[in-house]
Image (spheres, rainbow, N blue to C red):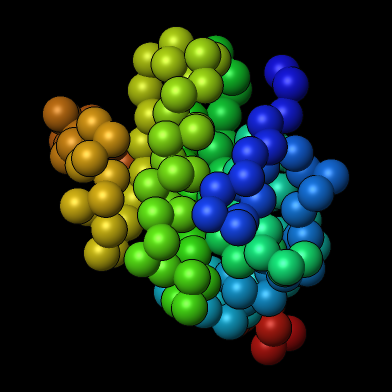
Length: 152
């Protein structure tokens, strides 16, 4: 799978991990993301290493990110999507979604999932809906797991 890199309104959007900045990603996720506050760097790095990632760079800084947790054949879970606040409203999140969902291998997946608190409208534009059979899905949810690790 060949990495994709494009220029978009003075931003670089890429799936090339060698261009991305895991330290910048960690900084944002650990400080700003409601879903993983205080996440340790090694957890972000491991997740980055084992996912299909897309990022947006501006003036050498990583300002947006998302990743697909996937087997590359049947399933993907979209996670850790963000665009830094001062760069929002420029179509960057939409362009990242377009590039991810337009990849041939992603088009062949049987199921894509995500969880969001407040971006339903964005994801609905790309075909995401409520799960057809919510009674079939289960989870183990450990909110605050990273805060506990920090205390130890």
